[in-house]
Length: 289
Image (cartoon, rainbow, N blue to C red; front, side, top):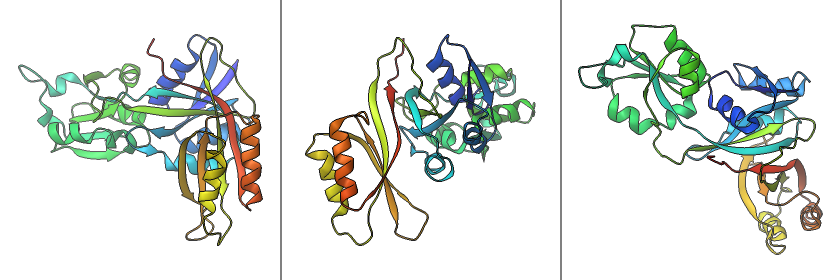
């Protein structure tokens, strides 16, 4: 049975894993900190780790990308997309009025900073008086609310989290945008295959440009363009070596074994660039069914 490390019970990561594996048997190991999720697979304590890397509203999760690049050397083996459905969680009897919920009774709202940022319009319009508190995960927020009855606390989190900690879903789908999806990657030392699902192939690479090379990025992109290789993502991040030094993270919609992609990488390296392959893997879209 595969062992999968992830963030605490009741987080979007937890929902996403249940969706990904469906009825396939897996053993889940929950950790409070994302650093422990990374280290569990790096240290051989788990077969795979679940890492959220990108969100529709907030973009890249920079901390997680930096861990993939700088802290661990574990390849991406699979990616999938899952909706980040955030809800207002608490005890309904604390906020009830005669006809509906009285949001003016909410004194404090807790959540992970990314989830909190996704729900700013709802919070400002319904609960402008509430104190906002960032915590390590949406599950931690819900657990904290569960431990402070009668104090007017509420959490932004998942319906699964509310169920796990015996709380009510006060308001559903409170994110600012309905198309709020998160891209997850499964990292591990070996490949994984899921049967019965359609996937596209993707390869993630890091390209570090040579110093003082005018037009280097243009030539790198040209190596993909004239071969008609589709880049679905390109992002610059600091190398952390010196100010103004960056690497470029790129997602290519092609398998690493492709002759065209191999030739493009060779051409880029011939320019004096450093290329590191972070993984070549199947990419699964979200299927509501």
